Image (cartoon, rainbow, N blue to C red; front, side, top):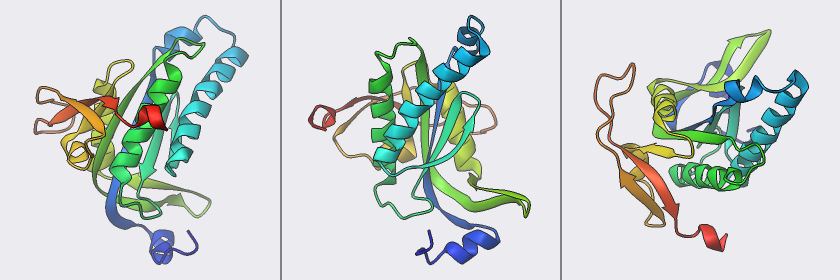
Length: 197
């Protein structure tokens, strides 16, 4: 970040740039945790988050924050990544593959969207955090909400940037909370290079 020409702008309030945002949420974790002691809940949650973070770091994604049993990840921020949509999609695929046989038996729904967002430090001088703000983040969150357990839902903006290595199945136009227009989305159902990684 020190080498970034935008760093000063980030420090004083943020810059607008294209990003790919990924939300991943553990399905059924609240019900799952009711059967366990608090220490066991934390251990299970940390184990699942560790898988998601490891997959994210393999593609140089930025872990923005943990939100309960969900994770918010940014690509193309703060560092430039011309293939940010593909990186996010590879991360999502790896997460789902890694958790298919996880001991907890829990599944994850993932939503990915690409668009403009303001990225920078939000908060006060006493407590600040680097994050992304804008409709792009909201759409990614809504797509995650609509993803079933084990699914990866990507927006039309994401699918347009993916190579033929990614196998997509189109959904019916999707209406999501807080978004007036129906969204063109697809499910990521295959990654042809996955076996070679």
